[in-house]
Amino acid sequence: METKARKVLIADDEPDILEILKYNLANEGYEVITAKDGDEALEKARRTLPDLVILDVMMPKKTGVEVCQLLRAQAAFKETLIIFLTAVNDEGTQIRGLETGADDYLSKPISPKVFLTRVNALFRRLNKTEARILVIDHMTIDPERFIVKVGEQEIVLAKKEFELLYLLALKPGRVFLRNEILNQVWGNDVIVGDRTIDVHIRKIRQKLGVDCITTVKGVGYKFEL
Amino acid sequence: METKARKVLIADDEPDILEILKYNLANEGYEVITAKDGDEALEKARRTLPDLVILDVMMPKKTGVEVCQLLRAQAAFKETLIIFLTAVNDEGTQIRGLETGADDYLSKPISPKVFLTRVNALFRRLNKTEARILVIDHMTIDPERFIVKVGEQEIVLAKKEFELLYLLALKPGRVFLRNEILNQVWGNDVIVGDRTIDVHIRKIRQKLGVDCITTVKGVGYKFEL
DNA sequence: ACATAGAGTTAATGATTACTTAATACTATG
DNA sequence: CATAGTATTAAGTAATCATTAACTCTATGT
Image 1 (cartoon, each protein chain N blue to C red):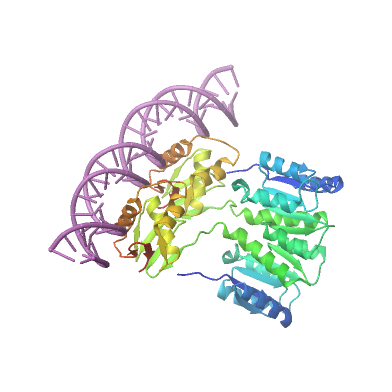
Image 2 (cartoon, protein in one colour):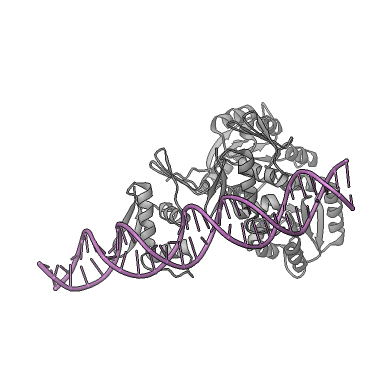
């Protein structure tokens, strides 16, 4: 399954800070790229297309504000999160920073915990719009588009069928008990007959034409390609 | 699509602060609602459904953090922006605040300018629905000129029809739930009947003469050429 | 080999959900 | 205030989905 880590680019000329932030972000599961000046930040941003760019305002070559402006001018970085990080807690700079299109402005010194919390807060909001697309081998299950792709072929499933398949595919290999499936897909207050799940499973198998749901007799079903 | 002024609810027990913030926000064109304690904030939030809630952490009746938690627990406030505003710049409080689901945490005293800039920054990101011309294959949707072009043919849509089409076309392929559509096009406080969306969809399909809206039964609609 | 339990299959039914059309209510404009 | 263009509701129809029931298949233990 594809669980692409969020990429974060940190640009700061102080190696210590770079190190601390990198360590903390990496610990949270982010993929971290570092740069030590404005030009390097720009160059790496273009190459790696990070989800978040953290910019020290005072940097050699180009200041954080300059980098921010240059990035925002490019279509590819219109949506990218940008945080300014700086020792200068000058009000004017902060305003200019935010007006340049930054999403947050943090003053040094900042505790790693507060830093991480703010980063997470930004991602949290961004996250709402993107549902999780599952890619398992040559199969793609996209809950946002409500589409299942097998190879290049798009297959349309009905609502319950899709929900059932999505549930199983969330944890490939793991067996879901019939009860679990009922709770997750139907809700724990709905009572449906014994054969309901079977029939839906059947429809899925039929429509997909690929044997991806394995029956575990007496237990439940699991997704397996 | 909502062109109404953004509604902001401010809750603080200090009348001075309430007044200053209200003045500044109103000046920027926001519609401001005020509350002087936690309970009042909750009550007014439920009634007015603001786009942004600014909560003082230290308030009578209920603290800002409590209000935030109660709001976030309700579906209607899942997307609402929430800012904490407080004299206490205690790190733990800040972390807890942000983890509760707040979007920003500002420490008093704060300059009105910085305050406004941060509010604007939050809205800016939310407002990614900026008017832009969509070109999808041979279809052009121009919200500025209010024109839809299919090939060389210009087609005139009514307001709601246009807004609906534009919303769907913003993210081609992505399924929009009926609820999402209602919120985005009609606004989350308007109540219209079940069949309203259908009828508008029908009109669009009819006028465009192109099959570009796909129904996903039990789920919603998506734009697809 | 047979009984049995669990799962698969199929078709039929009832329930949902959407489509369509027409009628009515609303709103801005001259 | 009349009108045209829009928006919404209502009501009937069509489509498709979910569920059940009845039957079949298959593996397992005796």
